[in-house]
Length: 452
Image (cartoon, rainbow, N blue to C red; front, side, top):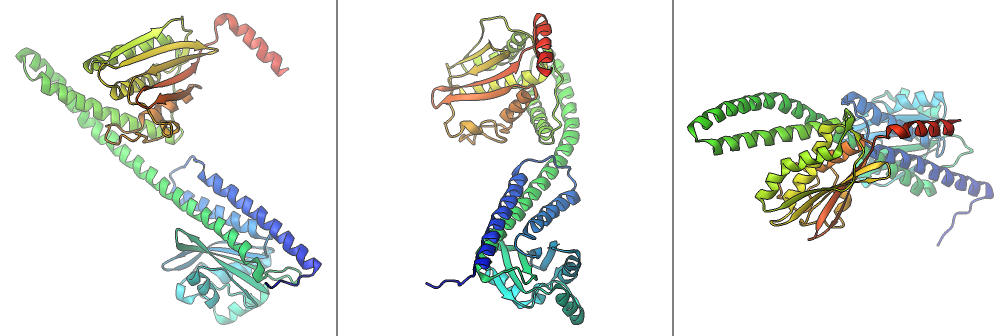
């Protein structure tokens, strides 16, 4: 096995370059993780594209001067190579590189070594001629710019994702005191992989954002254009119901129409709530409420549905509950959703219990059933969007629990689930109770003491 005969200075330079490489990789990974976090997207496609270009420019900025004095990042498509980021160690080289690289170059016009890197999907190292040309420049001007750069060595690395080449990373040095050798190929390839992941994640984010925009446009149409005829149908069915009362016929058909209208209105509201949550515009209007009264109303509404399935539905509140600041309509939405799920997944003769208790400064509500249960692997995902478990044929949007979690968290509470397969599930949520009037001065005094 051969070895490289490096001097002490060269070895120290290699170690410094490795350290720089690790730093650059950490920075790129940080940016990649940041892209994976949800963002408040404005819906402006130009801003989305601008943000992607900024991320790639930041990647080029991280490479210089850690690896070399010049770095370019380009995207590859069927029509050619398009420059998206340029970075040089000084302004003179920066302007020269920008002119050399150009905007877009057809594939057939690429220099041979760059084309080889793309075709072979393997990083290339070479000395001398920089081969940075990416654009149509007169030969005389190209040579003038290349001479001004004075690049001695270049590494060209393809950016690959999903088995295809999506871009090109180029790193070059000019200073005689800096080295860029074939031994550095693995390090540059590692950086190229991180840059490729950054590009791919940005592409997926932009696709998702376009999907959200398309969904919102459809939702706007649905909300406006479907609600109007639904309102007409509901009013007409109410008029027909009066006629049916006089004629003593048609009640079954009218009930079916009104149930269908209610179901469609529910789906529209669920989709609207989801859009508000996704855009961070979901709000609540809280007043002091009696949780027992709210639970009693929900149980009265759902009891006929439970009894129609031979189920027993009970409410158990064994202590006096303090008032809770809450949005009554929204919390009622949470409770009825949890109760409707319990009825849906509990078999005939099963029992469903609704309970409330005080725990510390919170009121905790629990809905327990004797249904089919949820597997251990699925429990962490029950509040995810569109989650419907393994029973894909069960009707519903899969958004109810996602919205319930958002409502509870908007109140400063939390929601969770416990379950055993074939034995049933318990869904619970807690909301902060109002501070009793007698306790407010003491609480305020303690707060002020803590701030002194």
